[in-house]
Image 1 (spheres, helix red, strand yellow):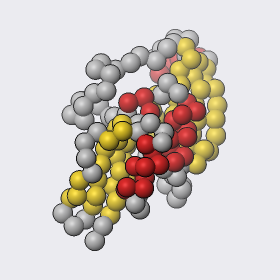
Image 2: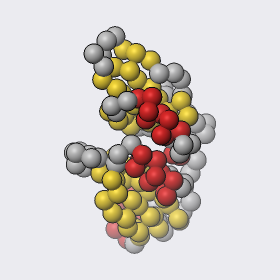
Image 3: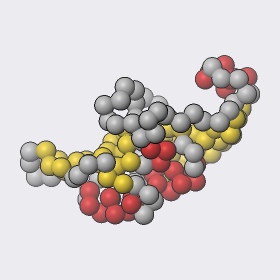
Length: 141
């Protein structure tokens, strides 16, 4: 897999949010023109992107803000986890409580509670930029 893409309405805020999780900004670009229109199947695309890389370099996250045409909001605005389609990305963290505190400063809110799976993981879901669900997993035991 090369990357996971997420459409956001606030590119700077999303960059700051994922930087808080340790991702590093790899680069930024404006995408537009016939190849973009042909690839995404939408005419007249002008899109700013930021590519972020995980600290170990094994994964990348592409954040995209559409200038034209305007991004379409999902219905309902904050779909529950059992909605069809991709809407969650999970990160391994060393300290889930500390990560929640750091992400809360960027507007993240817990979807449920921090839960423990057997003696293996502490887990939680947070609502992050553009309403996506960001999952955190802390290995324990």
